[in-house]
Every structure is written in structure tokens, then in C-alpha cells.
Image 1 (cartoon, rainbow, N blue to C red):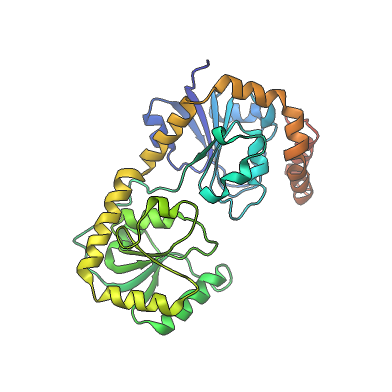
Image 2: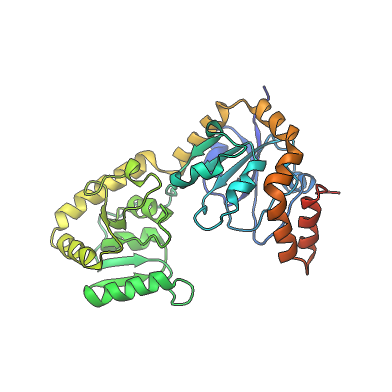
Length: 334
């Protein structure tokens, strides 16, 4: 069985630095714009031939082409499955897939089996830390972008809530500087996803008020112990919850401490790096690669071709379109 030592990590860095600390060698290939990298181009950018390629979701069109034939172990870390319906099809050209939203894992079960799928929920970065001594400046904080055009649901939700409750503020900036200064921190899940803000807010010591979503939320957190949940369809109920919590600062502080302790212990990037390492180490790497490469034509025709042709048409005015077309025809890199 081959040893996985050299890793080419493509896309978002996420916990790649922690992965290196586990003894791997590697290169991070950033994606600032759409591209379609062949095996040769990926090796050139990495500076070596990797034993494993990890594509960490960037919400860009397919960045790797011809990978159904690549000699490496291919791993897809899929985050935005609630936005991109083509992800489960693209994932079939990989050997393993780590999926952020637990309720979407079944969508990946086509060529991939349950043994080749890992639930890997969001986590908090190292720099997200609490400041328990920070002065509370705001009653209710939403930290993030709010725009009537780009985030209309979020905009309308906050506009309505602001008309019903006093003390709501919206701020943009570094979470570690914002969350500790609020008595309550509000999360919004516009698409019902278990988002990174839950973990980031708790890591910063926030008393978090968040919608209770699916995707493993209740497996990880307990309402009233680590955070507080609300039904986004019940605005009056949310108002009552916020007003009641503002009258109970000691309870809020206790819950904030418990939420932070849980995330700090179990839901940091270091935890996710360990989970992925152990998952890969427990899989039959050589057999997985051999199985995928033996099915390369079937994978391309069944799962990839439609995606690649769509992007070939989408980018037909630039060279990227030709790259996708060649990949759709099984000629990536030629």
C-alpha cells in the first residue's frame, strides 16, 4: 500500500496548515479565478507529483479536469452543497469525499459508497478566541455583510427584526473583535445550512442565538446549553427569546462559556485535520485509485460530461471553454 506523504491542496486553505503539522509535505494551490488544471499543470504548480490531491471547496466551476485518470488519491471537501447541485456528480471522479452538510451525504452515493464518504462539519480557526473581559457595547449583534441586492433575505429578516426589538446592530469586521463586545450574537442561515458562523461565534465566546438547522446540528449542540435556537418562521418567538435573554446576563455568560469550551475541544481546524487524516489512513488507497481509473470512461460519460459541456458553453468566448470541451471529450491535457 502506498504511503500518502506529499499533498497538493487546491482551493480554500481551511485546515491545510494543521494537516502539514501531522507530518505531511505539501503545497497549497490557491484559486483566485475559474481555471481547469490538468495533472501536468497541477504538478507544475505544486512543484512535485502528489500522492494525494485535496480539492477544498471554493464555489468556483470545476477546477480540476481529467482527474478521473489521475494517479493520485483524489479527495473532495464539499462545503456549499446547498448552493451547487453539481457537486455530487463531480465528486464521483474522486476517490473519497468529505461533506460538510450531513443531510446531503446521501446525494454523493452513486459510484462512491458510504465507506468512501466522511461527514466533516465546519470548524473554527485558531484566531477565533474569546475576550471574556471585553466591555459589552451592543445588545444584539449580527456580524457580516447585509445588502438589499446581494443578501435580500438577510436584509429583510434583519429589517423586520430591527423594527420589533431594540438594540440590534449590524457590523462588519473581524469576528474575534466583534463577537465578545455583544451581549447576544445572532446567526442567520438563509439556506438552512449549518454554517461556519456557528462555530466561529462560539469560539469567540459569543452567546449565540441561531436557527436550529438540520445537517447534524442537534448531534453537535444542545439548545440552552451551548447556544440558543429559534424558528426563523416565528419572528415573535425570536423577539421574546432575545428580550428574555437580555434580562438574564448570567445565564447568557454560562451558555457562552459552555459553547466556547465545546468548540475549543472538539471543533477547531486541528480536529478536522485529524479526522481527515484518520479517514484516509483507514481506507484501501491503492484499491480506490485502481477502481476509479478502471472506470474512468464511465465516470466521464456518466457523471462529468454534462457538467464539463455546460462550462464549455459558459466560457466559450475564452480559452477556458476549450479546456472544458477537451475534458468532456476525454482529451484533458492533450
